[in-house]
View 1 (tube, rainbow, N blue to C red):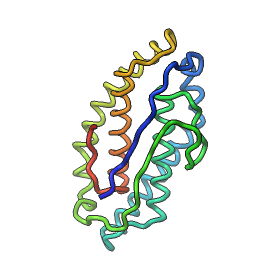
View 2 (cartoon, one colour):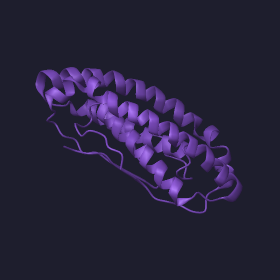
View 3 (cartoon, one colour):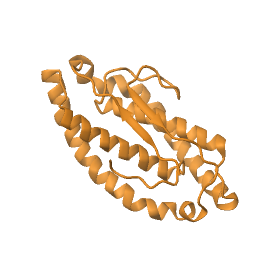
View 4 (cartoon, rainbow, N blue to C red):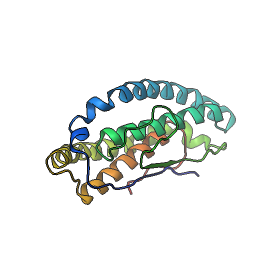
Amino acid sequence: MSAVTFQIDYTDPRNKKTNALRVFYALPHIIIVNALGYLAEALAVVQWFIILFTGKRNQSIWSLGRGVLDWQARVYTYTGLMYDTYPNFGFEKGAEPVTFALEFEAEANRLTSALRIIWAIPAVVVMAVIGIAGFLVTVVTWFAIVFTGTQSRGSFDFLLKVHRLGVRTNAYVLLLTDTYPKYE
């Protein structure tokens, strides 16, 4: 089973000005990736039926879902103050210090895919709880970066784990992988 690999390089010092206005800079990306996210969710339903009947993933649907997830991960981590390089528009990574990898596997487990909506509930609940903690740490981090120009390594590492869990949970829910998401 292919697991999601997601890593961001720690950078210090940080740009105070771009972090202060980060949400506004990221707004065009956020609008586009949210719209594409709805498309990926709709195609995941189609993929669910394909897997249920054939036991295999459709590579075109998978590739689009993977591309959307990669772009979303770069945008959400940029918005979440993880790095300062403005993300590239599109599915291709630019100069962002982000590594995202997920390999295509045609074979899919019919049982886990058929019950995915049920089996994903604990992962989504855990992600929601950890996401709330991540949001609070992001707010504190915003103040730290804006006033000092640095982000503590501890907050960076925690937020990286939060974002990594979010990416893995989304990949699992979108049927891109059969590997259950874990917090690490």
